[in-house]
Length: 341
Ligand SMILES: NC(=O)c1ccc[n+]([C@@H]2O[C@H](COP(=O)([O-])OP(=O)(O)OC[C@H]3O[C@@H](n4cnc5c(N)ncnc54)[C@H](O)[C@@H]3O)[C@@H](O)[C@H]2O)c1
Image 1 (spheres, rainbow, N blue to C red):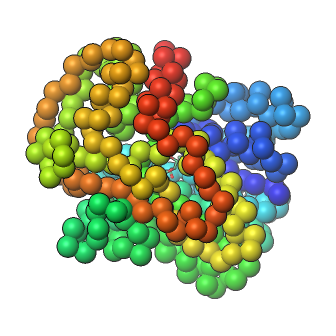
Image 2: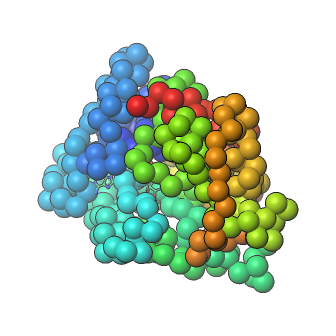
Image 3: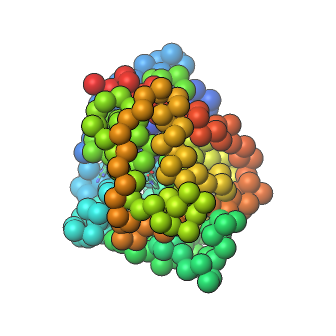
């Protein structure tokens, strides 16, 4: 297959591209405007491609340039698209919602339009647990995890921009039966390639494990716990942290799945959670650094527990996680952080 990977110079996309280059015969083209992705990542992936006697095609382009995207899609005849490119900072989405509706929803709609016009058969979409919003404990079982059929009530423009894209995919697949999609709702993504060749280089990251790794490497003086009075065993919020390589593998399985199944939405997580304190303690243990942690007030919109029910993807696909271990997630995050300047 010829596969277009948008956002392949970014954190998660680059891990998927690496797996595709190492383990498949597909021809890969990355399209990225490098707004939060890195040329160094493309360079590292190019080396990996060469080692595997392959070529990595890279197009530096912005998805909002609709005319150019149309030309690329018409000329290149892709069989599948894996669409990572997006803006993803939740507080920024509240301050600047139009940036999110334009970059995440409008650009996705245009990409889907070009896909249907050019016979693209498979579309894998990066969705998010933010589509669920702040789940109502009266309606969902937070302990066993969120199901794909649970209510989706995003509480910020980021989550809504992704939910709208899911809806556009659903309606398009109804209208164009040859077009199939899998929307993967990622939970908290962390860790990096165990080979240490790519990782998360995102600047000003707000994700807990990355922040803890920055504190452990002295890039931050201290870090904060937001809220210590949640109804959880140690009072801090519980989240479902998934290693990026397991998440990447789910995309490969989703491509196979669409070969002979219909479009669908899947959670991708481990169906178990760790508290903020457990994560920090694990990062301190693997780094042997007792960095400073301060307690602050809860942040608005942070639910006590957010974990996935991954029964659906496990039953549907051959997806078998290999890195479901908090120490490994923290170690690989830390190893990459040490390599970054
Ligand atoms: N990181 C997480 O924890 C997480 C959780 C849930 C969902 N997601 C989703 O996963 C996807 C990838 O996230 P990530 O963490 O790898 O982020 P990232 O910022 O590292 O990667 C996004 C990539 O898309 C590119 N991009 C953005 N807008 C573009 C545009 N208009 N045209 C071309 N390229 C553009 C960026 O340059 C970057 O390389 C996103 O869609 C995000 O919403 C991420």
